[in-house]
Image (cartoon, rainbow, N blue to C red; front, top):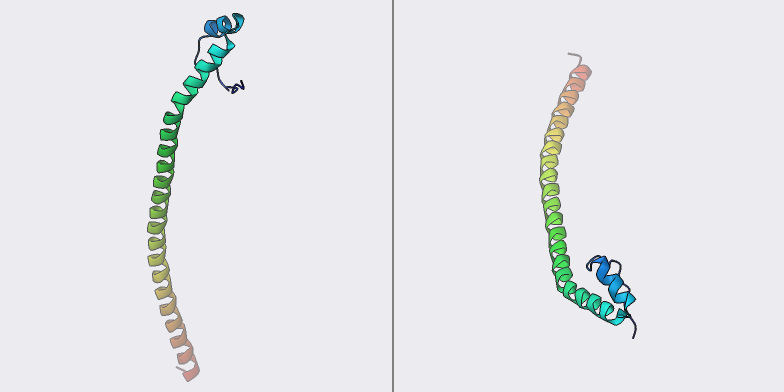
Length: 102
């Protein structure tokens, strides 16, 4: 029988692990660990679902913040274009006056 290796054996007290291994009850130990792993799967699935929801939520918030920033920049760019147009008109008026000799 092939047993899964577990990254952490912290779910069992050390004396239980030593007792099980010393008495040749490795199959009991591994069976208990597999049972614990199976019980963790639904919890981990729920955790993954919640993590995915949070990622999507954060992405939506970031996109909304970018949209607000874009709208703010648009209004600033529009104001800048209006100021530039006014400056160009004033410059053209000045050049026209210079050419006419006034």
